[in-house]
Amino acid sequence: MGKLISNKRIGQLICLFFFFPISILMGQSQPEKPEPYRPAIHFTPKEYWMNDPNGLVYYGGNYHLFYQYYPGGTVWGPMHWGHAVSKDLLHWEHLPIALYPDSLGYIFSGSVIVDHLNTAGLQEGKEKTLIAIFTYHDSKGEKAGTSTFQTQGMAYSNDGGFTWKKYANNPVLNNPRKKDFRDPKVSWYAKEKKWIMTLAVGNHVEFYSSSNLKAWTYLSSFGEKEGAHGGVWECPDLIKMQDASSGKEAWVLLVSIGNGGPNGGSATQYFTGTFNGKTFLNDEKPEMVKWVDQGTDNYAGVTYFDAPGKHPIFIGWMSNWQYAQQVPTHPWRSAITIPRELTLIKNSKGFHLLSQPIKQYTSLLEMDISQQVKDTISLSDAAYTMQVDADLVSNDVNENIQLLEWNNKWGDTLSLKYNPATAEIILNRLQSGPGDFNPSFNRIIRGKRLQANGRLSLQLIVDRSSIEIFADKGSLVITALFFPSKPYQWVRVTSTSSKIKAISAKYTAIKPILQSAN
Image 1 (cartoon, one colour):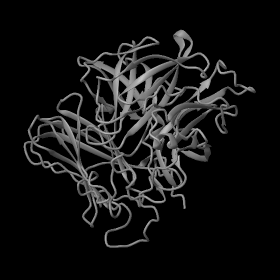
Image 2 (cartoon, rainbow, N blue to C red; image 1 turned 120 degrees about the vertical axis):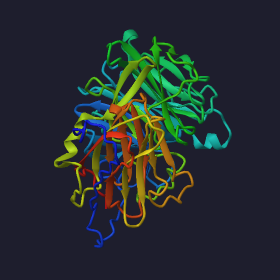
Image 3 (cartoon, helix red, strand yellow; image 1 turned 180 degrees about the horizontal axis):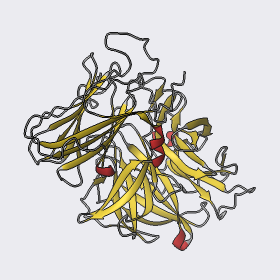
Image 4 (spheres, one colour; image 1 turned 180 degrees about the vertical axis):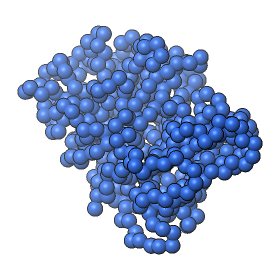
């Protein structure tokens, strides 16, 4: 954050603004980019359809990213596991498809673990075995009306996760006649030296245990009458964390829901509580709902197995099932969020999950193209990929304070406001660009702050077609897509409220790292 422009009350209109050309000087022209919405700093497949991140695992200096992938088109189809690898979670190398559908079905979501103790007995050399547990989806059984068309399968790798072999005796967990029975997230419960599978089952999650990853025993269920139930539960993740203030152990359960998010459609909720190796107990009232991200476009996120560092690393699918198959991108669809570190804090209202960009992200900032906002700033052609830091001190007044606005000469506008009275950050993408591909897209997105005080700090990461807002050190996160008809040419930082005590803003360019796959 930059130093505040003034520490004194300003009893008159404050209007700080700056504008800059994003790609060209106004009035000039340039050739149309072949992929104008391809993110410059977010992972995307080279082509075709992608959704949920799967099998996030760190091994041998490599962060593996597997993901739901359909190599036959830009809409959802028979699911495979796509594959990419990175040394820093920022620069990705595309790899061949890891898992293909077979006679048991499509390859739905799941997880990958490192079998350090060779509990499955599948290790063949010096490398530890990486084991994937995933959902088989039998489309023929689904069409026939059976209730057992989803089972859990296993595959393994003995070369560090680069090539995979299916287990010969799949499935390892049969379906006990439950229609939605999927998305296994496997973790190691060291206290009892056993594996725990957290599985999404319709309107709740179920826990299973195993000593060898091949045979699983039911333990308990959680959630039928707790949390949000606007859609089917998906992609759970059970994480052991520490309270950042006391250091005490706590457990966090992530659960995505296909519909009923805080701003409509897909979203991911979380619960905090205790886990004793068999049951999870929520420490909140059953009706309490807490969201990992209050925006429209962060879904099915899970954390890395064995990632280095003290904090879990989280990645989400940057889209929403309301319009994911219709967004105007080609020849690819969907991206992942900036990888985020999760921190758990506790206040008088209970535990809360904070999300912030991984520390490696700062290496992308062009610090020599960084400037405190005072008047007009002209920037380079790559300026549409940016970080904006803003710091605001205001009175509690019942009015929206205009903070930032991106626009172009074609009339596309994306704006950000703040209402001190309701403690809401308001992102308006009603006019952000053509949104007629789906009536649910162009909307006003609201996020509620954890603590309603007079000082608001913002870190905004803006790519070609997305914005990620980290407010108050990540206690409120809003992720949203936008698709302007042409790149935004200016961003204006402006406030028209006489109730502001002080405001500061700073722009920093971000180095593009993922280029178009032409």
